[in-house]
Image 1 (tube, rainbow, N blue to C red):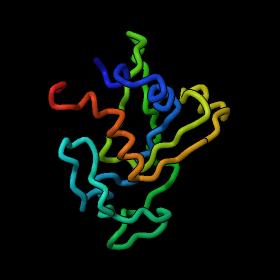
Image 2 (image 1 turned 60 degrees about the vertical axis):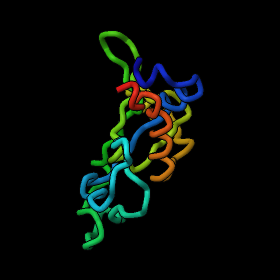
Image 3 (image 1 turned 90 degrees about the vertical axis):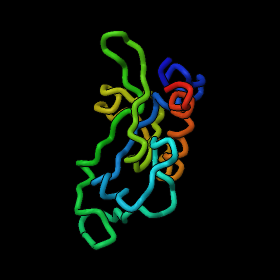
Image 4 (image 1 turned 90 degrees about the horizontal axis):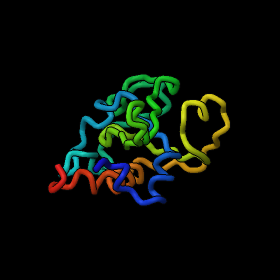
Length: 142
């Protein structure tokens, strides 16, 4: 079974309404961090480099970056052949999860109809992704 199919109805609604925002220069951002035991995400110990506003650099920050170039991808994608929904996220590189007031589709995002209703912090985002994917990445399922 896929990760999406293993979710509760409430979790599926959350996932369909959520975008994963990835950190700028993600591997530099997490370069001083260690992964969780399962390798899915990062241990939240505050070792990430600073992000700042993207306009200035320092030895403790990621290189300059532009907000328009941050990757923002839906947490759920639909397989065009089967029509089945699937969860997809790169847990190590997440910056935050943004949840909207309706399903995140290309049409809804381009129309500007969706309104942001919640944005999880870095630590909350990692925890939420781990809870959503945890059943699917358990040792007995891999």
